[in-house]
Amino acid sequence: MNTLTAILVEDNSLALEMLQTDISKNHKEIEIIGTAKSVVEAAKVLQKKTPDILFLDIMLGDGTGFDILEIFPDLTSKIIFVTASDAYAIKAFKFAAIDYILKPYSNEDLANSIKKASHQLQPKKEQLQVLKQAINKPNNTLEQISLHTSDKIIVVNIKNIIRCKSDNNYTTFYLIDNQKILVSKTLKFYADLLKDIGFLRVHQSHLINTKYIKEFIKSDGGYLVLTDNSNIPVSVRKKNEVINLLKNLNL
Image (cartoon, rainbow, N blue to C red; front, side, top):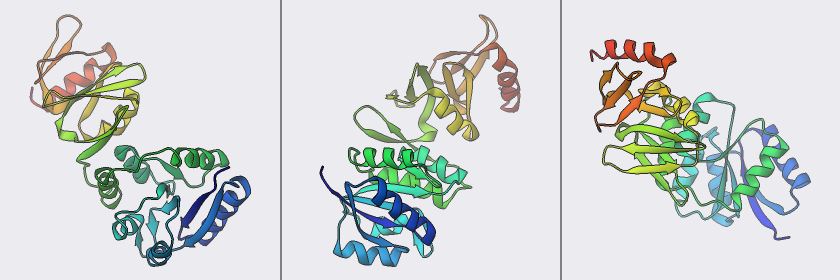
């Protein structure tokens, strides 16, 4: 068994002790080589040691986990982010397409995160920027989202997304520059994520950015024409919602 080293950064003493105990008891392959409760303490520890895995709490007493990453921009450790049960934080991680452990976590959650960490790619700086902005300014409308394709992660401006189409467990994003991006997450995932920032699921298979609606055609069961000249069917149960939306948009 190959031994992995880890440093734990958590500002809550009880949570830190619990994480140490859970790792020591259930993950013998991991050697904890340091702990810290603040940005300053973490910086001192990381100046001396570089772990294979860094367990990083987002909110710390003297700053955030992002401050640590900015102090060590070339850190090679795999990062397991740890966050409390906060709706804004969870949404931020989803927008950034970055994995996390949600406190309080289960043994299964911890095991899965360690397994993923040993195989994962480092988050791109653009992803971390999306995450940082989303967490630091939770009341602002998010401008970017990370899309995880089969071979890379693409950060795109949300305003450039015209529509999304479902393909079973995959979703295709259509952008204003005619780019198509296939992502291995369901349309429901993105419908829930984008519903408060101008997107509407008008059909089981279609999610649209409402600012790109050109017109609504009532014949043939009803469908929308978007500015990219695509025809998007509207389900019967969504028709009234679409009509009311168009009235508000003066279309």
